[in-house]
Length: 270
Image (tube, rainbow, N blue to C red):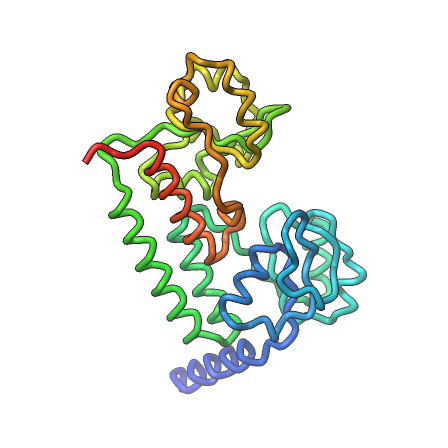
């Protein structure tokens, strides 16, 4: 009897997952995950992607990341809302719960966890096989990158998010893990906040061998700091693919491009 009830419960759960037909994505990276899983047909709403071309421009907007139009979202009658950390306030999350709208929070801390969460999302969407195949390919690629770019002594890297005020990445931010895949180490990995503000003096003290950023003009401002190893060896590098800042499956290839750039500029001793 107990086994029969368990079987029925699993059947109903499976049916409920497969029946999902109205999904709203509240982060560009989550929208990318849906596309990678060939599940874009389930999307009925997305947030606008600041500075990123909308991959599905015909879909209704429910606001921007961190500025949600709750009334618009509710009007779309979603049966699942995909959340990213910081994109929804506690009050908005509570409102979704009160309305009986299911949500799924995806917050990967490293690339392995990212792949696990993509595969878990596929199961929730009723696209288990697509998820299994996609995750397997991503794991194989990630393993190959680690083997290719492993260094006996990790390269010290400062990742500049913005110049004034000066922001970087903390150790729990997923890009710090991507740097480790490249045989590098975030010089501020000991800081817990995802995007801590730091001083020029603290960067000089930690003496990075490479400085990464998204804007060459901002990076050029470091040229006056000739005592910094990265400046002395002309290693002020523009991140080659800003997909590194959007944790979805494409982040693995964005990491590969970053690894190749670092290796070309600062070859490891083999």
